[in-house]
Image (cartoon, rainbow, N blue to C red):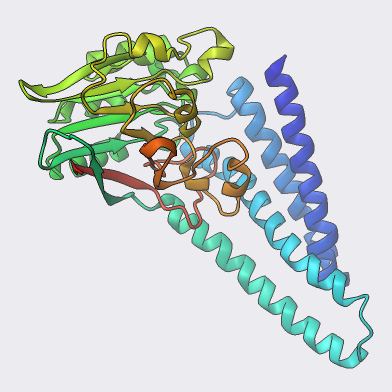
Length: 374
């Protein structure tokens, strides 16, 4: 029932977006010539429909190219909607201001051409960034009383192995990670975008990670069977941290690594987050590095020590300005931030993408977090 309501709302919003794109952008900018383009919003709406139906039923055959095409329609709709708003505002305002008509026509023509070029550039840049392999983003963090002079941690987040992100991507990701010679690897959720039984072959290269590796649940694991994901990463030699902690290091050189289940578990009833359980055996006299998929979990740790939280989920907004909407639900979108009481949080933009293979002003990344004593 909840998914039906979401699907209906999604389709309604996408339909209204496409109508707005047609009426306030194509029709205004191209006048009578726009009749030939009436098929564009119709095709986009059909693509949006197939995308949401596929999420619900798997209606699209196992074809990465076909899935990439239909999911792209969703991204194109959003991006053209942004362009249409930017175009519509000055056109609407200028139409109400007294102005010489001949000069108005010249200025509008210049503005029209500029916006068409901007729209094309926006889309092309989005696709080029979306399909580009993630680059290493190195960030240095100082943590009070940290026992190591330089601890090299690699965070892999939001890989989304599924319809279009396959084994070759995972193999390259593992190879790049190993080249960084990390002391520790953490996978902070949204590893899978299909049931694990369908993508075991694609996930298998993760067994070649040379450093000790830990995994936490993201919201997409709950969509496709969290139990299966947990079981399979264990087979690959990766340790799930399910509301649990481990001590990293030996003797006097140790810190806590705490893993929290995703907040969506509270609503599904499966693997809910439980900070009290996770911290039940934590030595809070020693530094605590916390893994939590969604950045908003930092607000749930007021009673516990958290020197640094590593999160993902947001994709850095994936397609600007979508990140502005994400800010209504998450306190941070990307990068390193100082939170209340001296806590720090780093939010990875993620290595993969969800839905359309598009990114704009939010490039994917392999996050190399160098932790040093403050």
